[in-house]
Length: 271
Image (cartoon, rainbow, N blue to C red; front, side, top):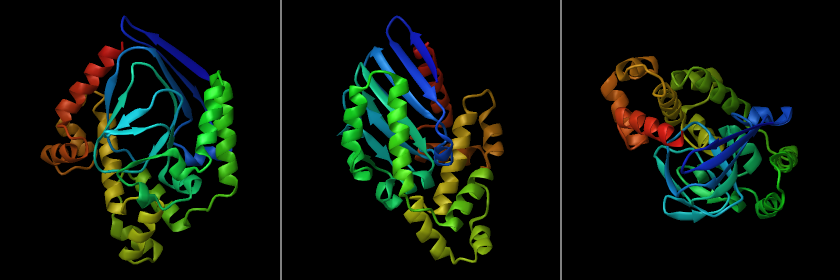
């Protein structure tokens, strides 16, 4: 486990990270992260679509997510930005699940979560008990142990994803959202309608919408570097810079230039 501590004149916070057990790794983009801000100010965070499912286990004050008050929560795949408001001090554990990992662990049709966040009990009936136990536990190592044990128990009784959907997800992700959807259906021997229905149930978005989010997520990552907007548009599979700008307007609510500037400002403020 690794713990990083940061402090500026205005804020004090830490993040703890640990790799998950081998059995959970195919279900996660990365290991659990524990976050705690012990001194600071209330903040608004713009969360943009990415090809995964965030799961927040809350150990502090409730969050405001798109003007809804939530404690521990999960949010499905989406095609629009969200605003998350936190209090001056807060503590949580964040997991980023793959769509099919969320489908297996939650056991609900993923279209029920599309473009929305729900309280933890919606996907884990025993979620309140988990949250209470985490609040009673002090160290990050012990908290991660509780979360891993909980997820492993859920996984033991989990329904497997459709092999065709699993292959399609991996193919779309590995090709950075550029694989032709018609080609995927042909490869599987499925009709376009069947492919869409299976994706809505087990992923939450249609294959076309998922490919769009995957491309957008790659562009978001590229904006953290120094490449020009036109160069990023070409590298991420957009027709031109105008196409990239339209996608950012819809998916992030900002232009690429404004998004990059806001990222830089937040980085400087965090020190």
